[in-house]
Image (cartoon, rainbow, N blue to C red; front, side, top):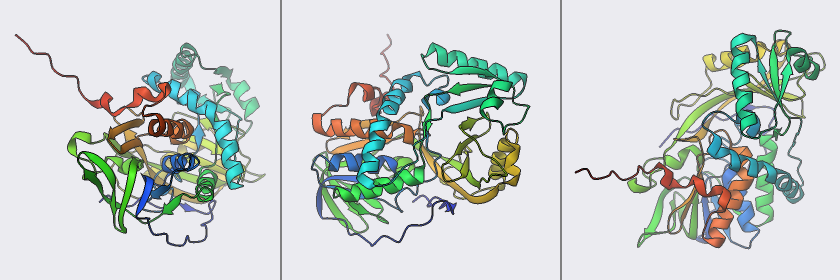
Length: 403
């Protein structure tokens, strides 16, 4: 069993009152393994169709990646060489976010801090400017709206940046949310439509009968289900849960982040700001989130001095005001990363659906993923925008016989 992720030491997200323990039901229509952003989004949507839905989470809701994220909805800034296959899915999901936001806020009565100021991607020095030019050319060839800015134009938008900032890209269509608020809203919305939410309930095994998944075996008992949805993030590829022929190429990539408290004296940012080292996301409650390292170290928990140094030095390089900002939180989490950094959305076997591997795009892709899984359960097929992300793409083609 992999170790638990490090819990956010996060004064920004005041701990909610402890949830009363909930026992899993003996039977439901859909059992979802994983209570992160993806699992809860799917549960909320499916329950609205009248299905009896149960979510089982090994830790607490959002403890893996969802509460460790920055909340970026940034398909333009994220676009890089090799990500063309993912771009249509990313843009489809971004277009669904406003209606997803409105419905979620109405259902929960909570504001999720949806912000639309866009992203600034910065460069310092000739080498970084050349790489930024390459990124801009790629964005334009892909039909994305990104505006080239000189150093003075960047600083006109963000006066707190250092004069050494040489150039930038303004990605107006990129948005952001506050992950803590989104997760709180999803929990409340799921409760409002009757989803059974079970925490501290690791899944020991899938129940199989004649080649079909018919439920789950957990430490709190068995759950019979017509359909099981595996949405366990970085744990989806964990050895032992799936047979070898259905194994998922998903691994954890650790990310460390910090939350800083801004004041009138320190100043803050008006946009999400990216550099080659870090990204910074201002939140409406006065915090500035600086993230995130990318570490291929398995399920190694903790926050390291080297990771924090990299984050702070990367931020200080462009934003001198961070020196006066107070630390309020440090944390780490595990991105669920597939072999091609794109999600896996598919029926793995009769009664078993998978929705995992979203890498650093979980928040961006949540609405489209939930809609795709709902379509798969209702119609038996993924919608067109999701069909390229099946499990079969990782199966090597058969070798041709040679004479």
